[in-house]
Image (cartoon, rainbow, N blue to C red):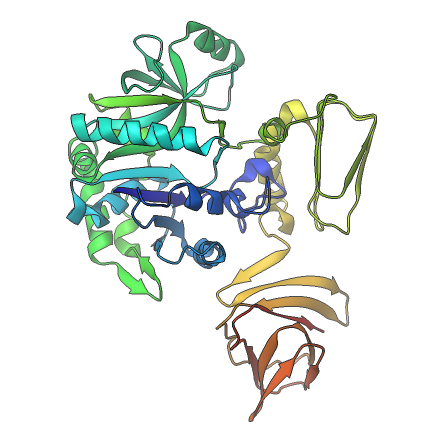
Length: 450
């Protein structure tokens, strides 16, 4: 059995406005009807895999569980990081939680990557797992380079890679400039660093003890003092905040003498920019790729995307452009500068523009809500309540509310009265009245609130 550990944090600013701090790219439906996180869960499930462990943040815990449940994956374990401490802390904490399975192979994968050829990927995983069991190596999957790429780190080998074989690593190379990237690819001895790792639990814990001993005590304390909360395990905040933020590559892999790689050609991408989305979206003969409600007229080498069916995006005579339209924000960019979107987000944050971080839809433990229309005297929201979801008992001193159920059945409490409100029925909540809603049914419930 391989024990998957899925890293599910990050802010994803390079794919703004679709990806934002409140709703990063792993949860977005960037390439189809499922999110990158859901696709990752599916890849790492089945007879060869134990139930996955998902390491995420407090902000994303309910989104992650909701999306896992939506694809029928109910056995995942969710570990909540109290603060962001980079990948070394997340991986060590997961390994310590798996310490009872010290001989088991642990696979660590980001939640926001795409892999087109899943069978080829799984074959590489099995090759890597066998190499790890045979040698005790710390192994990372290396992706065969098909072009110079400045957005990826590289792995250097002593000789050209051989398909289907685990090979020792010479060194890790940071993201290069364009000229250096071209030389790296031409050498035939470089692979892209996928950020997907395999090792035995005991071996990686021993590597931390040797190369990053300062992380051991606070991580162990965070695990030992952590607490179960609903269906989450919360690492202890006081202990976790003492951990030095450092990546797993820097802390362990670049120092380990027994690091290896297995080359893989599986249509891998970390989707780190809109240019990467354009490339994997299979542009037409004019180099144009589209998503959603879009019309492209006389365009070349461009990516056009609408995130809202009510917004029809039209491109006319565009060349080398990325245009992404959402209900509350629009990005129009030179495709060659698509990776600079993260710099734009920093400027928006400094100017306190809400769209820098907040998405139109706000996720809560019970479901989500979004504002459809707002003026000085009224606000209209659409609310979705998950099966079993219950909102808190509350009252408002400055507004009254009208609720109209449009799908499902709501259990509504108004003062002392509890009633069922079914589809196409509504209720009125007077100013100052204590109220709440719940969904006791088996399907999501939707209502309009005015």
